[in-house]
Amino acid sequence: MIRAIFPGSFDPVHNGHIDIACRAARIVDELIIAVYDKPLKDFVFSPEERLALVREAIKDCPKITVVGYSGLTVEYCKQNNIQVIVRGLRVFSDFEYEFRMALANHRLVPEVEVIALITSEEHTFLSSSTVREIASLGGDVSTMVPDFVVKALNKRMAELNENRSITPLMIRRD
Ligand code: ADP
Image (tube, rainbow, N blue to C red; front, side):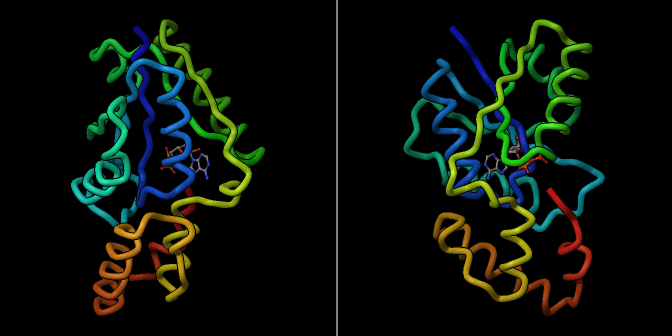
C-alpha cells in the first residue's frame, strides 16, 4: 500500500494543482494533500481558508484526503507512515528548486522518495502567484481556478483593496 503526500501552500489552489493531485491519485493507493503554513510567506488566504478550498476542489476524489500541517514535510511523512512525496514540475526553475529539496529531504529521511510529475501542457504557466496577481488587478481567472475559488478571490481582493494592503501580496512569487 503506497501512501503519498502532495504538500504545498495552495494560496489558492488552482487547476494545475488539481491536475497533479488527480494524476498522482491514479498511481498511488492513497494521496494526502497537505496544506502548509510557511511563516516566511504573506498569505492571501488563512490556513483554514486554503484547506477549505482544497477540500472543495477534490471532494469527488475518494482516494484523496486533505490535511493541514506545519514543520518539516519529511517529519510529517515519518509520523504518518507516508513513503512518497509528490511534487509538480513546470519550468526549469522548478526543477532546480525541487532537485535541491529532494536531495535535502532524502538526506534527512532516506526512506521517503520524491516523485515529480510534469505539468499538463495547458497549466505550464499557472502558479498561485499569477492567479493572485491577475485577480488583484481585476482580471478574469475563471479558466485557471474552480468557480468557488474565483468567488473567494474576488471577495478577498475587495477586502484587501479596502484596507489598501495589496502591494506586498503581489510581489511574492511561488
Ligand atoms: P509551494 O509553496 O510548495 O511551492 P505551491 O502551492 O506553490 O506550494 O505548489 C505546490 C506544488 O504544486 C509544487 O510542487 C509546485 O511545483 C506544484 N505546482 C504549482 N503549480 C503547478 C502547475 N501549474 N502545474 C504543475 N504543478 C504545479
